[in-house]
Image (cartoon, rainbow, N blue to C red; front, side, top):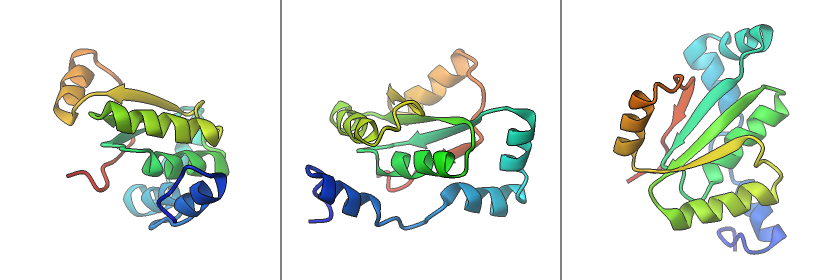
Amino acid sequence: NPGDISSEAGREIFLETASAPARLLSIDHYIYGGQLVHERKRAGVPLRILIAGGGTGRETVFWARDLEQYNVKGSITHMDFSLTSIGIARGLISSLGLDHLVTFEHLSIEDFGAKHKVEAWPKYDIISCTGVL
């Protein structure tokens, strides 16, 4: 069953059904004219990615794999209002050895925006919000 991530085989099938491979390079090309990744590498400035409504972590895995595959320094903030979903995402990210790239925030998008503004966090370069109801 492709949706069953309880086994290693199920997890790999689940993760290999990407709807948009190489998201990082596509965004860089179409939105930033191919300059974002190049400029960040040149300047040594890490890329900041927000996964808004990250759910159980599938989208976060795709972005983290892109960072590693293309040797781009960066960090990912996985934000969701469901502690259950965050728990599943943490387990998935950890099982794939990607936890060094991801931090988790348990907040609604509204609360996240307010906290981001009040605490004057740096801006994100890329915000992904896929499949959020």
